[in-house]
Image 1: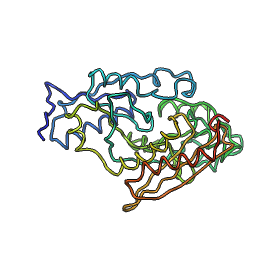
Image 2: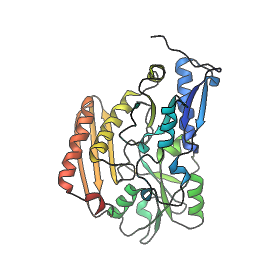
Image 3: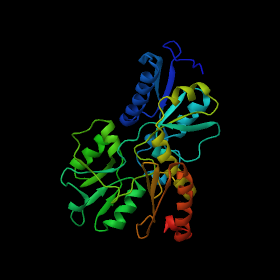
Length: 313
């Protein structure tokens, strides 16, 4: 197949949020496309698009609209033809895409673990009773309430620098970030400790960069196929099938992790009530191709055990 290559005169437009992490992910996507197709940097244009989740900083995310907070405006630009592809943190992505859009390309997944960040303590287990932990994640709040009920949790939003300043100002004793984000930003100076997935199951697709395009754009599809990481795609498909069957969002207390060993995929899932009083877990292993079916089946098993109103209890 002959591919119509981007040129400096007719650049390939990459849409993204404007945060440092989002920009790093867009640059990684561009650099991989440049290497795959031997193209100059000038053949690409990174377009920053403001999204609702970044514009509203004075409210907890769960009090706004739980789905599409970090994607809606970017997807509108994609549908309108203002950009050719959109680069996302897959954990922020609703499972159902707007009509006409698909996300079937993923870059190699980074470290999936949550990171414990503190200027005074090394780990969660070091925190004394009554210590204050800041987080805006409903999942992390529920997991903390379930496993460390002696801690106090406060709302905490902002980029890495903002959160570190809040820690220095004594707003909280500790907070969480995604290890993947810290690694992609090269922030080795941040005092963090990765938390084992056995202790805190991560968000769906955490650490995975997803690339969205128009479904009928064969040119974009051909260009992107060269940088797709199939193992990451298989893992994300299983986790997102689990999330989709639960009808969850990135602001629902749900965790999951798919891992590949040889030709087998292991999927772990967890749902929690918002207050952490109830925690239900499940696990399954099967052929890699069966990941989405495993995710669906696991969600149905957990829902049958949970009963109505589980996530709001």
